[in-house]
Length: 102
Image (cartoon, rainbow, N blue to C red; front, side, top):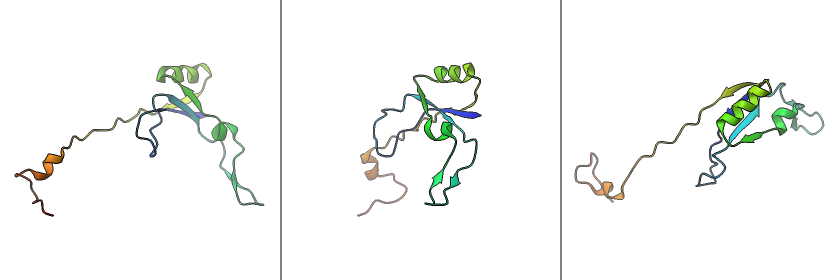
C-alpha cells in the first residue's frame, strides 16, 4: 500500500499559517469507490483511505513511522510561495511602460 507524506497547505479561508507546520500521512485507495444502488451515494470499503490521516510534528517523524511499519511512501516536498514585493507608489512612476490614467 502506497502512502503519501506531505505538508498540507493553508486553506483558502485562512490568512495565517496555522495547522500548516505539521506533516501528514495519507494512504492511497486500494479499490475504486462504488456507487450505492439504493441512494446513488459513493462509498468506499477501504477504511485507511477514507478515515485514516496521521499527523506528525516533523518530516523525519513521519518517515521513520512509515519505515518502521514497512509502508511504501512517496515524499512530497512543500513548495514555498514566492513573495512579489509591490509598492503602491509604483503605480505612479514616470517610467512606466503603460501610461496610468483614470
